[in-house]
Length: 338
Ligand SMILES: [Zn+2]
Image 1 (cartoon, rainbow, N blue to C red):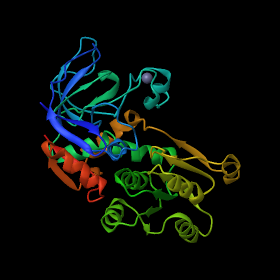
Image 2: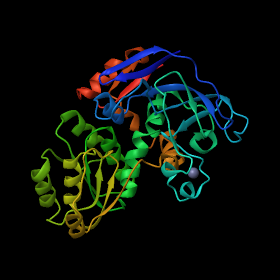
Image 3: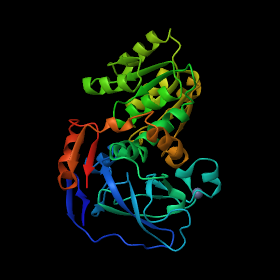
């Protein structure tokens, strides 16, 4: 089969690979309905995470189960499933507390930018639908695997409540999903920070009530203006740079929560400054498994349409162009047809 391998910075290739097989009795093999490129795939692509050996890319997936190991009891061949990018047993104490992304057996999904993928810990990771979903819902169900689940977690961690004022820092796919999540959770005001027209338009479509194009101190000043100098009740940090994290904390009112889901690169916080900000922080890799049944239900009922975040569709063979388009910010998120 053809699959995606990152050989080094800027060097991603679609090449012939062996088909995955069941390695452990808790594994499943899934034939993917579609796959995609994640903003986090750009970190190694840009050389910001070291790539020491060729690496199988892709951690967002949904599709039809082809085979399961002997120990798998809840998932069976023929089912349509969505799984999280974090693999979890869904039975340990952290899983029971809703933090499946810190599961005692946690692994990270790889190799999903390919037609077939091996999913370890299938029982704890995969969620099946009652029947095969219509094709037009595949992009939205695929989004649930990571980008929607992560945006949702940012809003959940930031404790978005009905009537809240929410700021979303970051207009990438996750930030846009954060806007959608905040809207679903009943936020009254959703301020999206974005400088790009196409992303601003999508943010408004997903439920943003205000757009701020300024960044840094100017951005914080605009938030203060819009919130009668109070600051936001909830802030979603969806970038992961020092500038975005500082901006997120400064936009939050005392007592607010910041949900941070951008993987931090070069973020360092001063203890005293944080102490006097009186802001709560909760972030990390999203426990998507916690939210999957609810998100899949909303998608299947057509109450949300997160698949709109894909603004470029390419065949898997053109995966390199998909990475380039996202790297150059010509595309928000690339869907790969199989
Ligand atoms: Zn667990």
